[in-house]
Image (cartoon, rainbow, N blue to C red; front, top):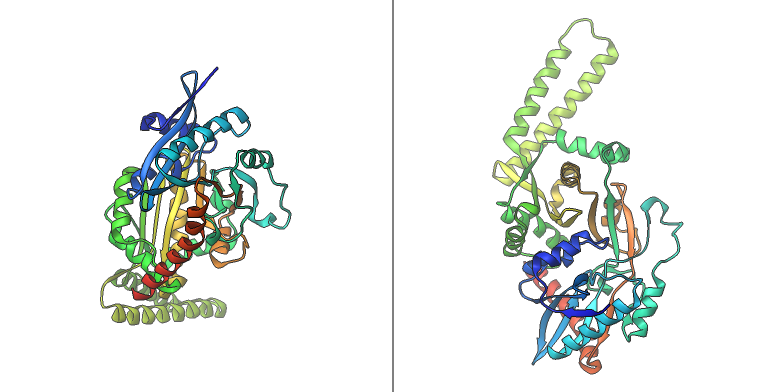
Length: 410
């Protein structure tokens, strides 16, 4: 029995292994290397007697001079209970990184320390995989700890997800189901396709303006759609003013006709009149918005995700702040989960959340019967302590400043 390290595994073999693994995630696929085309990828792994038993997508980024950074997003994928395998992989990866003048190897594996339904967040179970963390420390690898804030790590340590079931809709709380129905009643229309990169960028810009940060541009979204192709989930939600006004005007006429019918009780008349008044107010409001927008249709929400045979990942969503009460985000999330059912994908990741579990984004995601995943965290195998210290302490601050600056300029 012997191990062999390889840094250029065939992409198909590599992806097949990732998809079969219990640690399957989109950030360790070869497609993610194609998305991150400003990094140099290495498809590393180890073979045991000719059989692939562990993998790690390494993204290498140039820092300064001839120095590089190695980063394994949500990787590597190893047998955490096999000390020899883990030790061999990191020893060989360290040797390989030194040949590329990497100052450090950073990684944040998709390994769950503990998970629990959001409703049970006050009764958290005990942490798992403490022995694996101890093994990594024995190998000279630094653990960043059980961080809680998203800004503290490259990838969020807390993740929101949903394990799918055929009757997921019936299990949603009353508020969520009501919001989905209201979105439909308010005329929210869902459009799906690879051609909506511009609209996706527009919807994300709403978030940029609200938070005064810079996210991604249309070129990035178009590139993601090209990479994932048929495996992408690209949806926008719109309001078409003339169509919705026409629908409501028909409803207004129907209510007037019903009110004119004979034999109605006083209660029936009052209910119809209340509904008519509400409909007329909505028509008036829509006409005002139509005039303000100066166009027939406006994009009010967008969602971008992708999937493989076992996992769907919802990467980005943006909301128009003036149309939040149209509940388009609920309509798009529900449409994405419907895709999970049709494609028989058992797991949907809603993405990272703050560890406080009380911010607005987390509360929105909790409406979907989400489960909280606390991952074991971020690790660093430092190869050049002096240069790494400068990078680790100065670069994040510079990146935050640039993002805020770009967001304010937009």
